[in-house]
Image (tube, rainbow, N blue to C red; front, side, top):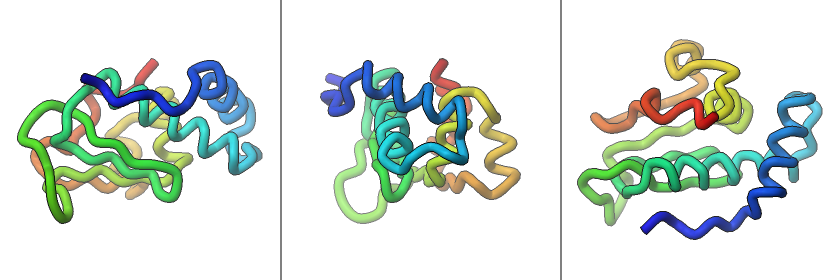
Amino acid sequence: MPPRRRTPPDQGEQALALWRSAPDQTPRQALATAVRYTLEELAERAPGRSVEVRVPPFGAIQCIEGPRHSRGTPTNVVESDAQSWLRLATGASTWEQEREAGAVRASGQRADLSEWLPLW
């Protein structure tokens, strides 16, 4: 069963539209909402618990089917800043571009999200 959404889709879409219109001027609250909304969308599209995706300080989810993580640091982790994450989620940049730039750190065999991104 996919995780329960905490961000109402209409609010998530509004925050994402605001970010798309002015990424560097997006208010922190809207940025946080956009990040959480896109993380929730990824968790819904790629259900599971084998990869942890972190976008500090705004949110983290577990996704993708496979061996479940239960204690300590997960073996498959993806971490990114908010701007880089939103560029990936929306298709404004690619997995390879963000990895090469050092904006996305991924460890573990399952930690390649290129199959799932962009979300739209």
